[in-house]
Image (cartoon, rainbow, N blue to C red; front, side, top):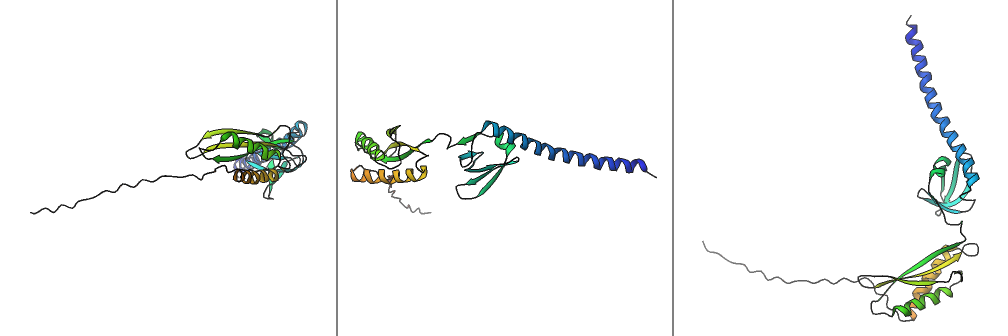
Length: 205
């Protein structure tokens, strides 16, 4: 009756089902265990601004299976806890003080010390910029048509929104440099055209 073949087919199907269930159970067990370890380690809390495996947003909640983020665009992202536990997590909120910088290209003939003084004074007067650590300015590099200057400041995220303070700082630095007459040239390129005179030679055969 070919019972042996029938029993073999049944056992084979059961074996495949067992393998599938094994993989599914392993996934569930890994995420469950990862959620417990994440709860113990606490690398982030609800509302923290984090970046995990290239996904950036605010933490909504941590469940037994997944970590849910809301991106800065308002989209929901569900990340498996097993992946989150193994990933490199960048937490922007863990330290209340967060630094920002404003990059400015000033003219090569400009007074760099004056530019630094104007940058520092502007950030000190910008609402939301922390007094300690104090703002500072560095001359970063000599570019092709300008000198790159960066103005640094810190924001206490418990008292002010980092993005709004940085935006206001960029606006104020631009206005302050204009008012001080500090040149901020746009990138320029010099094109030289060579005029070639061609001669047409007529040959007689």
